[in-house]
Image (cartoon, rainbow over all chains, first blue to last red; front, side, top):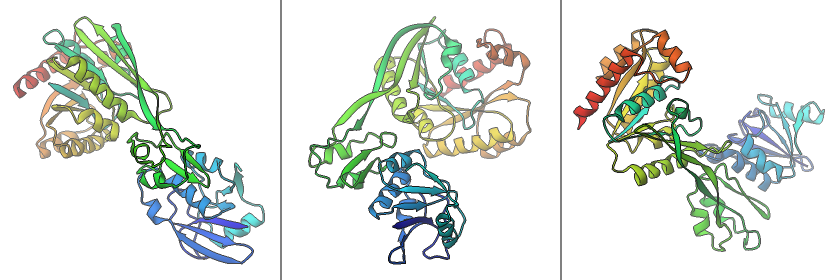
Length: 114
Length: 283
């Protein structure tokens, strides 16, 4: 399973970015390989329009199956996510990445859609 | 002359001024008033009049043709608004984000993104005595106010080019819709009120019309409330004040009944006279 996080930084010590579309980084944790990889999303987050859908497209391209984020996607991003096979967990904004992952594993995060 | 009546803050009295000025001016010259606050037009409440014409205007957005598409994905990189999203073997069109620029449709090597029309809003044309009045109304749920305002201005060009005075009742704020409404004007009146909110938003509106290099003046509505920070600001910036409409219970009561003011309230009538005189001096 590939677990994705909207993140303020590049490693386990970063925090969940509460913003979906304008998240600075997307972190990818490959559970099988136990590998954490960071994707810089700042080029997208600096755009003026349609940032939510663009970030959703990237999450799709990165093969994310579970996404842990904060406030959750806005209307336009949600439209895109409806067409994707990704499970979304919200309200983890401000949590450390490790803490958020553990909360997800312990089934303590709220999920939406999918 | 095309005169835009705008403000930063909402609820300062744009429509009240626009409607009264237009009705009074229409007794002296060929005048048309256009309500361009397309997301919530309310000029018709005050103007009333007889409906002369109604037309639907359309917007064009791309429609993905799955049969023709070869999934090259180039369209998604061309779109400045990210209105096209590629998810594996589908292209999603986000009409809400589309600005109808046609780039994707024209450039698609497979002609897989034909533009299709859908209703954007309506333009209604009314007449009350000598005043012509147009109301533009955006389809509920749509966000594309600026394109409808643009089409409404074209409508004025087509139908009222020979008129002495075109008054534009602008949307509030300083966003795209306000810019679209004021940028073709010869002159802008910014309506404000002497409150901290009024002043804060007036400053934004002043910066906006200065950037657009449009000549402008201020009309102070509800004069007498708030504080004197507004006057200090206007003086320091050297901004003309064309008229002051005092804060009066009688005005509020008439307004709340949707009535015209200038034929009943002397201070409103004299404020309009001052504005019409200033407009005459511009010529």
